Length: 360
Image (cartoon, rainbow, N blue to C red; front, side, top):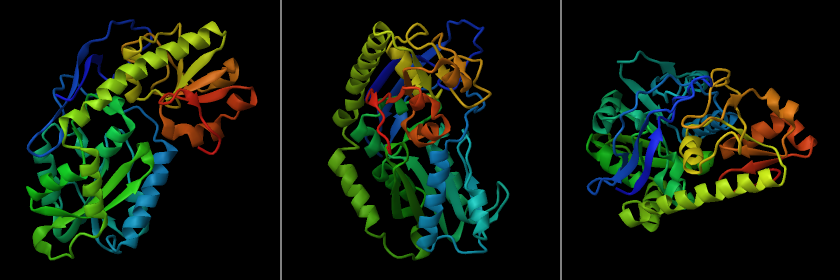
């Protein structure tokens, strides 16, 4: 066991605001497999709910960039078949790939390109899920796996990425071992800024006779080794960060209230659930979390009495500070809601509790 966040409400269950709770809670823990090096959710007794989020512009932009880079490597030839395993939270690359002449196939058919974009981590049986995806890759084809990399989680202390429904947290090292078990091996790895550090790995069958991995694969493996992605002592680091982060957030909100400042949150993200609960934040400290998803509005953050509210509250209330609960949203929210800064308010990154810099 390398990370224990205690008893937490289901991260994707946003109760109606008029249901006061208390909400059911469940253990939220990460353990590390000493055999393959995979960091995994220890136990999940929650029942997944339908996704209600709005796809962030940062995710859309990253998908477009990824398609460009993979195509540039010659792995997306026109006219081939493609199968996609997407995240239950939404988002798809199929339109982008169709514009390049790739043809989507039915759910059970083989394809020359099989893409998984943050989908694999939602499978409780990791071996079976990866085996299914590998079996659908046609001879000579490629398997593309996108994931929030474990080295990023460790480097940035992103303890709050651990959540119910997310069963696995991948390093290139762990994925290499998992792929070997289904007769595949990594060929290329690309890195993106999304979520602080996201990776896209291309793999092919060992028997396909493709060239040896390019320099990106050994470089990623060396970075894993440097950071220590298989060292339990290293993986326990985010738990220490969790306690300090929660205390800092509570102190900051209390300080803002004492100064007479109004604070709203922005982004009813699943990763904010454990943070708000651990920091003992309620609506007296944070009277609302703004979110663009109509399906979340009128609900509340799990495990708290904090309502999820419509973006119109930003103009109506003109808060002194808006606590951004997902840093990747900053460019789009700054553009969409200039009223915050025009009225003297500031965007504050919840990870650093410092004002978000222009051009971030």
